[in-house]
Image 1 (cartoon, rainbow, N blue to C red):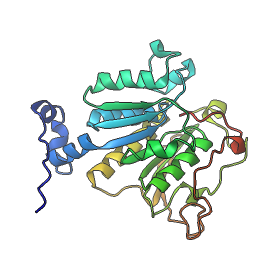
Image 2 (image 1 turned 120 degrees about the horizontal axis):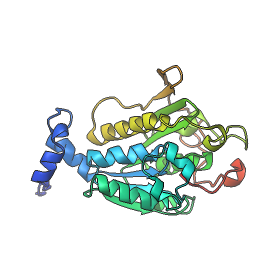
Image 3 (image 1 turned 45 degrees about the vertical axis):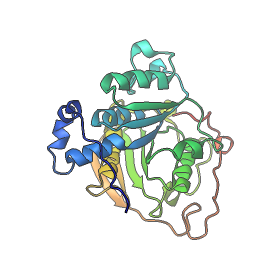
Length: 276
């Protein structure tokens, strides 16, 4: 006879802190315990990673991993709410830990201060339940997508540029980023935020959506964005979702995959080292 798994009760402090969650029928004490036990990896401590990490920390997610090896620059402060003026020149992961610990000291923040590459991505990803892509460059976006799929992890994806944003969820077996965009664009075809700019509030909108989708996955409630791509035009304040599905010809998750191991696309994309 197998012994029943002992579920740790919430502490009085946790009951009070998360009371507005606990009274929700979709969450309750059982759901809050799921959040506390969850392990989430966020790639990038920048525009998207900032609101994602803050809201997941406030929600009580127990373990949050952050991948980034960039330092805080004054140009980041227009949108990256994890960091303050006093954090300029500080490693983003260090600034992130300090900010998140101030919000919720019970959250265990694990930092991965190194470039995400093909030789370490699988080792990092495998320790988490859900992967969130907040990267700002194509080499990292494709690497994270491939690693999450090969590791069998759900991927909550988002991107921003100018006034436009998009968000979706990829569940292994139900499609991936390569179903939409099979290969990275050639160098110079798509400008980066540093080249074209981005509205400072936009990552807050998209990142909050990504955080919401992550919480729904942890709780197992609602309808996720899996199978749908949410397109946001902040200039017109227009939100629309387009349906998407697994592409049988996808080079990664298709019927006859050609991408079976991780690829470092830095040279191909003409990008900088992989940062968040």
